[in-house]
Structure formats: structure tokens, C-alpha cells
Length: 328
Image 1: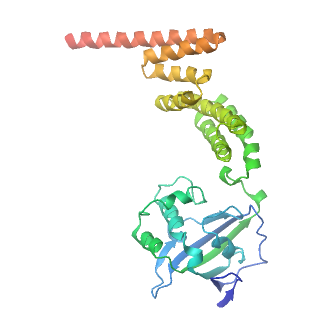
Image 2: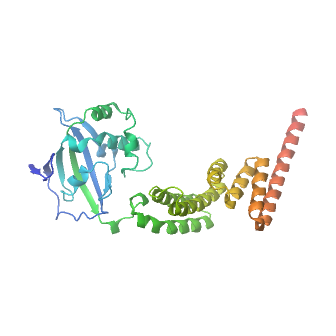
Image 3: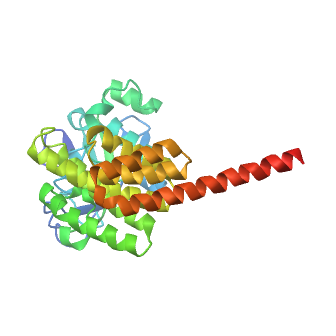
């Protein structure tokens, strides 16, 4: 089949190369669409810019989720499953393609941990850079031009048919997800699965940070979210202590205390991290602060001080033996 069709969209022409199967899918908001694509220039050689099959991984977008290249949603929603079609798109639709391409290439090179789910976060910041790091994309950005997209539609899943990642949840869904992620993190921590617990706490933090960007700093709702975030960060720090990542604990707890100097748990966890990296004075100062703010923690503080003294004595003994061996 090789028919040129107009999609009633200015600057777009469609040619069906291989007919799809069944009826046109129901592309409701939140549906996940999986497809392969090849992007080409409109020159005589039809120079290939990107090809998802060469990367070896198909692309996913979520309908209604403000995908960077908005025209792709228009193209995909005109297709049937298994259909292969070629779309000519004028410059009005392709201006941001170099930025999308950069994200996809970085992912393919192992530089981008977010997967092929590229969305609008940080898009404006990208324009601030003079180079995208790829000569062909720099050229395309300087001189926008029509592009050809060959797309093969692989699958369309309704929102209930796949597990949605937290970044594509609505604000209400993010808020509902947080206590579930928090509870799952606590359960995993009790089981000693610290890596998995860390991931759950981090996911919940990302949800809350995203919601917090929509609030005015230091106002009531922002502060409420900040309190929830700090609780999760401190739980995350407990996982880091178990994984012996002490300097990261020092970084996170110090950051919290810079903005919120009255959080007892932050001082307590920072004290434990200081003790592990032999910062005796800092550990003792933090434990004294814990006692000052929360006298009921006296027993826990004294236990930590005894542990610290024991470890310091062991270290001193090791140093004495080392000196003896050197002199001997």
C-alpha cells in the first residue's frame, strides 16, 4: 500500500507503507504507545538521523503527557497496530527535534538513566546551550528543516494495562502514591532489603519534589510537602548507613539541617555517620544537640557514645601496635 494522505493538520503528509491490523486503537489520555521510528532528512540521500531499531529498543510515549515532539502524538493516533507509515513534517513541527534526538542518543550511550520516556522536564534549559554535543544536531538546530519520520506502531496499552512510572502520574495520583511507596520502603527496610527500600524512598521523594515545584516556597502547602520530603530523605539515609555510604549521609543530613536546624533525627543520623568516618568531635557535637532537643533520647545517645569510644579505643590500639611493629 502506498497512498499519500493528508491528516487535516497543516504541514503533515502521510504515506502508508504497510497496512495495519484491526480497527483504529482507542488512544485515550494516559495510553502508552510503543513504536519504532526512523528519522530522515528530506535530501536526495534521505540521510538517516536516528533509527530506534539500530539502538535495539522501541520508543514509548504516553498520550496526553506533553511529549517534547507534539506532532508525534498526532502521527501515532492516525495509525493501526502493525502499520508502517511515512510522514513528511514541515519545519513548524520539527524545531525541537534536535533536543529530543540528543536525549535519545545520550540514553543509547548509557548517559541518561531516565529511559526512552523523554518528556518536557528541562526542555527550556536545553536552549541555553550553544551546542548539543552532536554536529549534525547542531546544524539541524541552526537551520530547522522538514523531516521524514517512518513509524511502525507496535502496541497501544490503556492506562490500566501497564504499570505507570511516577513521572507520568497526575498530581493527585502522585500524592496517593507517596504513602504507598513510603510504606513499601519501610517494609523492605525491616526485611533488610536496603537497596530496594532506598529505591522506594527515592521514588516517593521525586513525586513530592515535583508537587513542591507547583507551590510557592515557604508557604503552608510547600512546607507541608517539605516536611514529608525530609522524613523520606532521613529514611533513605538510614538505608545509606546500612550500606556504609557515610559521606552521602553527611551530605543529605547537613543539607536538611541548613534549612531546618531543629530536626532531631537528622542530627542523630549525622552523628552516626561522623562516628563511622572517625569525626569524633563532630559526632559528639551532634549527639549533644540531640540531647538538647530531645532529652528522652538519652539512652540512645549514651549507647552511641559508648560505641564511639569503643571504636576510637580500638583505633588507638591499632595505631600503637603499628608503631611498635615499625620500631621493632
